[in-house]
Image 1: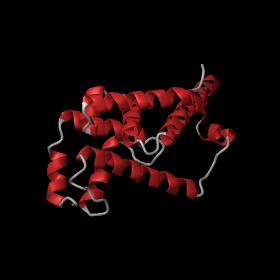
Image 2: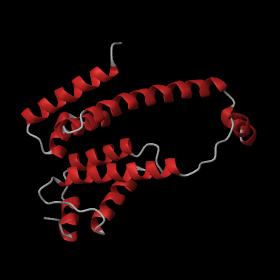
Image 3: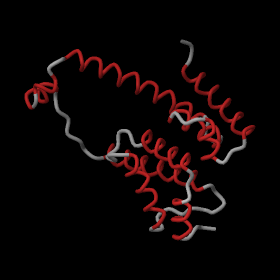
Image 4: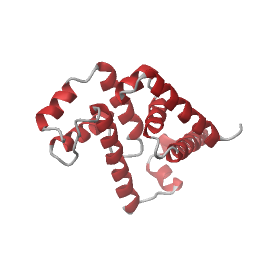
Length: 184
């Protein structure tokens, strides 16, 4: 049964501080590379879509899980649209001519490039692990929580999992992540 507008608002207002923090952390992690300027923008977009009926919350699912799924869907849609749009690319020379003070230290550009490559490698490994866990929603969600830096208690609360189920899902996610990363 789909929730009413008042039930959605009530669930949002009655979040525990840990749930609100977890949603904000998830939004911060998930919004990277999108046009959202801050995590609350994404949280409010998800809430808005629930309130206007574009997304339906089944009362049988935990509200936090619904919000995480909605935010993930929104971000995936934004990324697909951005990939399909033609974008303007500038050469390094053009950027240097526009604002040379911003790019004075080329070493900083190298450091940033290396950091970005490492981040992209880690994100790729996490995405491979996430994709390989398809069909194991609990392990996928625990992996996402781990990547957000959530504590075990925050994840259990948001995902509505008992300790035994959570521990099993965390072990599956950790093993998969280790396998995807390969030998050091």
